[in-house]
Amino acid sequence: MNLVLLGPPGAGKGTQAIRISKHLGIPHISTGDMFRRATAAKTEMGEKASQYMNRGELVPDEIVIGVVNERLQEGDCASGFLLDGFPRTIAQAEALEKALARGNKKLDQVLDIEVGEEELVRRLTGRRTCRSCGKIYHLVFDPPKAPTTCDVCSGDLVQREDDGEETVRNRLRVYQEQTYKLIDYYRKRDLLSVIDGKQEVETVFTDIEELLRV
Ligand code: ADP
Ligand code: ADP
Ligand code: ZN
Image (cartoon, rainbow, N blue to C red):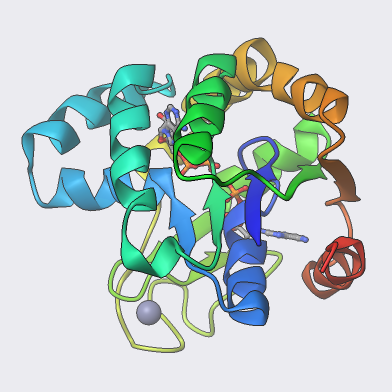
């Protein structure tokens, strides 16, 4: 299955992506994670991307499209993939369509996780991530046993630089202005399934399992 996970920052895309990827046996491709890894490794692309990310703005289309096209050529994508956080603009969606068509492929489904704005702010400002294994926590909704230590690997839990309230508000504005239109784009192509992301994590996942056209 070739899938896209759509939804505003904080909707739970990363949280659900781990479950979906395991359930279907397809790779989880998060452009945000790819940029954060490149930033940590101090590559040229990472340094460039982090300037935009820290302001809560989108990384320019030409950079993102190049990175994703390369990733989709890797062998593990042959039997399907789950894109998380890509596409985020119409130009990215069109580039994806073209890249897939070149390989005689197409998207099977787009899962749109919907959550209201104030809940998104609460989720993002309380998010903590393990620096070592990447596990996602929330200080209130999914708290670790100790506030700064990962339950799984004892790694440090950190707050993402772009999860401060001011940057979060900007990211939500950017979503409304540039990404929200993708809902209509994919609805017109009959690919869209909408999921109520306000429910508990496991309930959201059950809904996704039921909606998957497998
Ligand atoms: P996204 O990838 O869409 O930005 P995440 O999966 O990182 O979202 O989730 C954002 C924050 O909200 C995290 O702290 C996560 O633990 C929490 N979270 C995710 N899903 C839920 C849920 N259904 N209910 C409450 N909190 C959630
Ligand atoms: P979230 O879903 O919580 O907003 P991500 O990890 O998906 O977080 O993205 C973090 C940041 O990485 C974004 O705010 C943006 O700066 C950059 N980014 C990720 N994916 C894209 C994309 N497809 N296009 C442009 N910028 C992106
Ligand atoms: Zn960990």
